[in-house]
Length: 510
Ligand SMILES: [Zn+2]
Image (cartoon, rainbow, N blue to C red; front, top):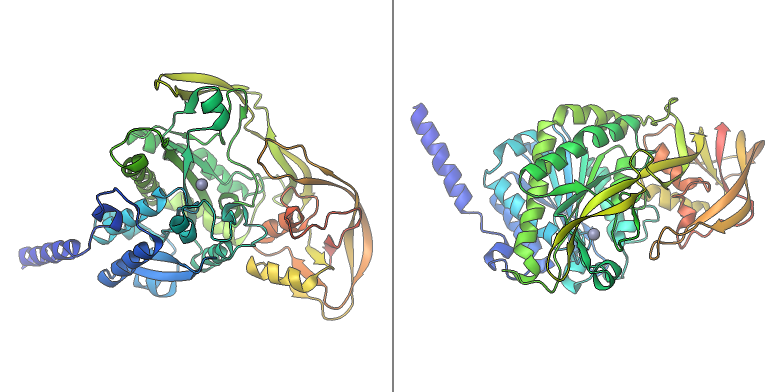
């Protein structure tokens, strides 16, 4: 009896496996990339053929193309209601948010196929997955980094200008992942470093994390001290030279640091929401090389797939400590500061005094000769302007517009129904100056000089109060406070930083 049951199970799983067609990219012998419609059709096929897969449409791109997620789970309740489970991390993975970095979307389809055919079977027992296979379908079809409106959605997480960013923020809210993994590729050919100086960077996989110092202290510490080093070690052990991301290296003379600290990108935004957030930059080979497939795409997809699979295995193995930091961080943020309520309005990189220089591998363009080069190391994170999280923020200008923006972020607020007296810190902007640019191409920021004065104020009917006793409070404060390096007012359409009394301010007591 037992033997026949096993035999039947074996037969059914073989038949099941055989009935799942290869990915479109695999079918084309990895010589050409499928368009967004073909990828969408493949996700529908997986949904139809497997009880463990469900395709969900998240919304539509600027160019009118559907953006889809493929849910993979052994739990029917997750597929039906998107309900997370107490002992299983929910992991969201995004591919090809930049349209000219196609490997992510292909690696995710391959991974999805393997999982529904029963490979890596422990992963679906231990994880619930949300794969946003092709996060930027316009970019894929138009061979562009951006969407059809030329928005770079990856720096839009504060303003939420682009529909794509808004629907991904909606997806974060709906699926509430413990882990967000954002897959990118980095070109190794640079104008100065390569054309003028003759070198290319020589790494296969670079990983970074949500590294803004205002991220929940325990979550950030776990990611920095445990998860990220383990991921780099495992990917390296699997044969792919992996290092921590040092930012873009464009010339021999520059200093290196880490990926940016701003919450305008998904990596830091998701971490500020209390999620473990990891980014991979796999190597995007040079156009002029000779490869078995166009621009080495088969090999690039292999590297991205290996990075993703290793990440999932690590999260499954480390589920318990990971959940022990991610779930509390989403219920109640605790600052890394001693009081648990400190936010740093100013954050930037500074010289790492313990390790002022680092050696990084480069390859010479003409002959591929490899050499370690010395770079100044500015990866220390400097915090300025500590502020204790207020009781609330009051908004007294463009209140309806601000309410719509808060709703998009899922930040709770209250509209004042009748005049209300309270104690607040009035913020008087005494000067605005451009912050010194880190390097060309990085967007210009303004630094507001602010005088703070405790006063009694009366809010009018229709003013907006954003309470700071909610899980998204630190994220809201960093976007609302004009002193913050990541304030909303750094964004193009919110140009509010001018001398005078500022219309958004912290409330001490209400
Ligand atoms: Zn990218």
